[in-house]
Amino acid sequence: MDFELDQELLALKESVQKLVQEKVAPRAGELDEIGGYPWDIKEAFAENRILAIPFPSEYGGTGGKALPMAIAVEEISKASCSVAMMLSGQCLGSAAITIAGTEEQKQQFLPDLAKGKTLAAYGLTEPDAGSDVASLQTTAVRDGDDYVVTGSKRFITYGDIADVMTLFVKTVDPATKEKKVSCLVAERGTGWIVSKLEHKIGIKGSTTTELFLDELRVPVKNLLGKEGDGFKIAMQVLDKTRTSIAAQAVGMAQGALDCAVQFAREHLQNGKPIGRKQGIQMKLADMEMKTEAARFLTYMAADKYDRHDPDRGRYSACAKAYASDLAMEVIGGAIQVLGEYGYTKKYPVERMFRDAKVQQIYEGTNEIQRIVIARSLLGKGF
Ligand SMILES: Cc1cc2nc3c(=O)[nH]c(=O)nc-3n(C[C@H](O)[C@H](O)[C@H](O)COP(=O)(O)OP(=O)(O)OC[C@H]3O[C@@H](n4cnc5c(N)ncnc54)[C@H](O)[C@@H]3O)c2cc1C
Image (tube, rainbow, N blue to C red; front, side, top):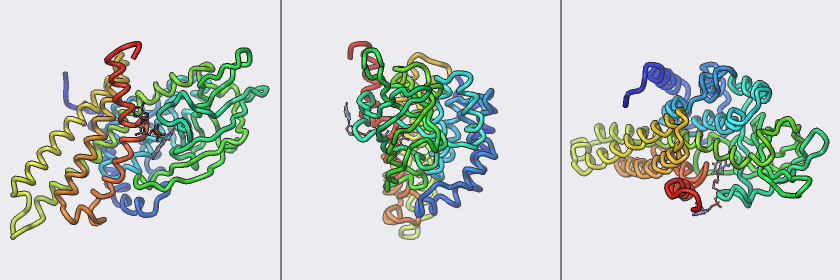
């Protein structure tokens, strides 16, 4: 076992750190204030091949592995989770194509996504289908060479700006009339309408949308896998991308811990730094232990994904739930160390606290992660 990152991963970490210091950190507070998508940062990420990380090299990416994704997402999240979403979202929206696409489908969509010329969204959640994916209602009916899709989607990240959306629908078997979950690649301009932009408590620099699908036409050639493969594809995507959500949580926990350590060194009470108080030292030590534990679980889950370990789904659920629960605790602890200042916008920990809450919710709530973990332990029939 080797607990050190290899030279390639260390070089990636350093180059992302540098870019984050130059382009992301100075804009993080402002992005939280004004919201919207930071197009200038997206251009910098495209130029520096950050947006290429989720894609295999044969389609213009840098390899498409989960561990480099986790490392890059962690570094960006130390400064801004909203900006990390740019990379996480590109991976989430495109992973179904990488996992289940034919060679032709991959050639059609992945190279432009890897260059950052186009953006991707993941269209799974609906008004009546969040945790219970199988109950989704959006329907796709064959009409010649197209599917005609009708329904609505909710809480879709980048639904307003994405060029392609991996869209989960129910297709109808013409013989049996049975409805099956299927996955299509929909393209902008074919009938998805943004009916609402969500106002969120955090990650305000990433847009979240409600979509109305009004007779959206998707060519039959854009079906991923077979009709009925959609549920399996959706879960395979999440097995990969949940490690990236865990990395967001680890990055923010580390960012908050760094802020708390600096504050404890510099902030004086009675002429002495508060870091001299054992009560503060205990808090910092707990935050460090837990953040390191979450980081190693996250890296291990990503590495297991990359090695096609049969338990990779359980590990990514463990990492996502553990790291996101822990991030709330660590960031809350950082606010406590900063005292009254922690409760103000002078320091980034209040933003991190708001941003970190969502990792306990999206890509399956942490209750659902615990069900995934338990069922994987108990085996078939549970
Ligand atoms: C900012 C943001 C961005 C998002 N981006 C996307 C996106 O890009 N694409 C996309 O498809 N979705 C996206 N989502 C949706 C997200 O994945 C869902 O919110 C999530 O899966 C939970 O679904 P829900 O909110 O409908 O919760 P519900 O299913 O309504 O659950 C409500 C509560 O009940 C609990 N619960 C439900 N079932 C069980 C059970 N069996 N046992 C125990 N407890 C249970 C849940 O844990 C939760 O606490 C996003 C959400 C947010 C907040």
